[in-house]
Image (cartoon, rainbow, N blue to C red; front, top):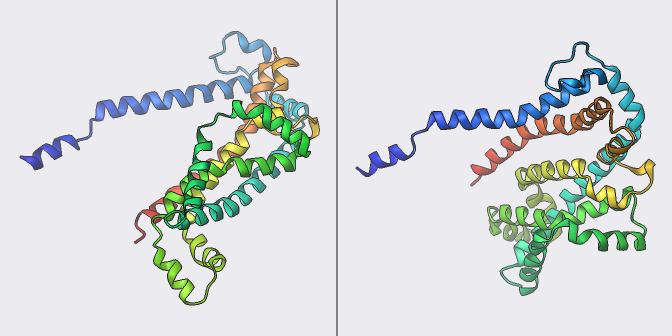
Length: 281
């Protein structure tokens, strides 16, 4: 009887599942469809916004490329994202390892853990004005400075993720390494850091998508046009080209393309990594 009850509960409800899949696909595909067709239309074809373009106007992409100064903005965004990603993985995993391995025997590390975690609940709007003031004072309101801020501001969430994953790595590995004469630093670099590869993949995906797509922090910190990011450069279409949506949407697609490629590649990587971590003993 109990077995029959379990079978009933685990039975897939296909009508509801198919309905949810169709709704989810519509919410994703419809905005993407609008973005693509508007980017390929001429301004005269904007009367019926849902209709397909009569003639495909690739010139919209060429014009948007020049107006946004795409190579410079892409380089700024790429440098910020790549350096933030590399140093986030190196430093945040190190901090999480130190905290997670010492929480049980030190009140200081335990308080430090909750101190970092509490920062996750502070909205960026609250930090915005103090952040601008301190960045100006320290002269870090530039590409290098905003990269450093991304590394620091990702620390609360990444500490939480890494600490949870480190619970699955037994302390006996640390003890065995120390018996063999390894220092804590050597233990982390040669043993613990490679074992955290599945979580590195997760943190890398989140960091890349957040850093690449972020609009608010570059808006309040990067005032020089030559230091702006791709996302911040889209803001010029709101005023100067407010009637030419075709160029704006062409520019949106060009800004979206790199993160879309990374997501498609990284998604496969992270699923494989998490699967390996799930069966690790």
